[in-house]
Image (cartoon, rainbow, N blue to C red; front, side, top):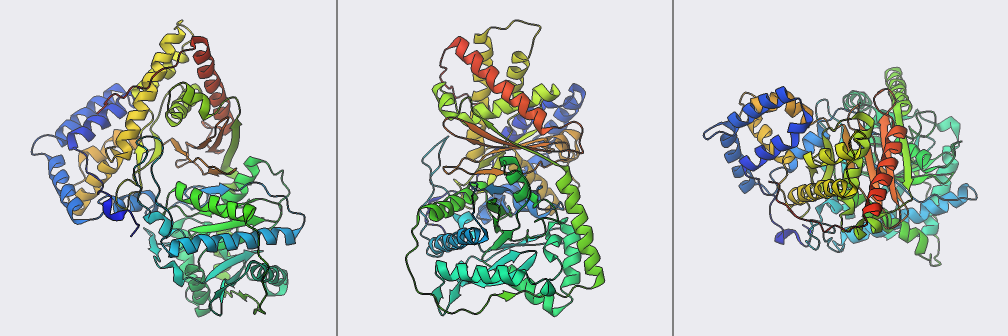
Length: 609
């Protein structure tokens, strides 16, 4: 348990009527009138006294009493474990480290050795339960947060399954004493403890040099087994079943599955080291012919060190949220850049062990198919990293506005400029104020946001700047209030999911509410967003969650805002470049309107529920 665990409350179950009323308000302006009238009738029937909703709500309240966190398992399965899509791009976020300038491959290995020591230093804090408790920032700042996610960073592994995956967590990371190093698609066991002592940085560097030399012996190469983990979860399950028929493969899999983390020593790529290209290399490795097979996506943390300076971490998302990845990454980068390596003696260590594989023709064909599918995913991803330099969060704060709410409204404006409509939007909201809390959803496509974006884009009517800013303030207040509701456990998405799952457990006929077209629309997040701020020069990115959608991760800094926008080329309705152009225009329009009116607006708090 984390130090603050006992003082944290359980996640609440919101009142049924409140959730149903909010659901209708969230969806009314996003569906056609005829569809909404139908939905309203379905919702009223569901929530009627003595109706299905009351029965499910009662059972959900009973579940809350007997569990630590009533939504955790439901949410984990729905968000991650039941998802059959491939992990790269679709699920696994990446943190792109500051660009490195290596003079040669030995310089890159020195960086990798320091990174390994940084990982071990962080692990020491985890093992000792010595991480300081996090406290909330932003809205309702100062509340202590649950720390359980930190203790899943290194000890977690996601096993593929035919219909649902399994997340296994080793809470005792102290027992984990080896890492897996991947180089040229080959696997090596790096023991970080020898004779009861942690390896020194020079010893780790020596072992990494041995690994690179061993990997260059093409006569001992094995096929790129790692590419199988980049496939859809069902396909990878089937391939894994084939692999495990041989004891040699079972032994290698056991070593990977029990490792502390994976270190990926990547080959240089012949691309400009722009932010966008570095993000792409971390998201998918540029396909099986480059570094895409030099990965093992089931492991919670894969640290990438490219010989050309592209470095970062790829995270399997099911054990923890983005801010845990940020905290760990920043600790490691600060260790690399500020720690002076003390002189130390070097012990003679045996060479790291190469992992062996037995791959029959059927497994070879499966690897080829997995590689082909990965390459299609690589070709399909449209990613653009955009640094908006005109202003940052300091300017927004001077307007007496929440930077996150301001940016969310700007994203709604950008989407409206591209499509002339708003859609269901996901913004992750931490509920770590509660025991074992993960996230709920802030539904940013509010009626107030729609009112603002329609006014500011209306070229036929001459609205004053004061009117536009009034609508902007209303939209930001609505966003802020929904954010407060979400972080205090009063949002609707987890609650509706819980009601649906309870109905399945009771073997009831699926309630009409969850069969309704509006509910399907509400859960198709065409705009999937999150704020991932950093204090070090690094950034997070990920792919869209639906084929016709956008993924937008943003990092507000005092004088600029970094946006990572992703979409898929195969969908003709989306374009990351077009979205960024609209976003840039929208941010400038809001700034100009604000400057012309030159009034600072106080933020009101209005109860929207």
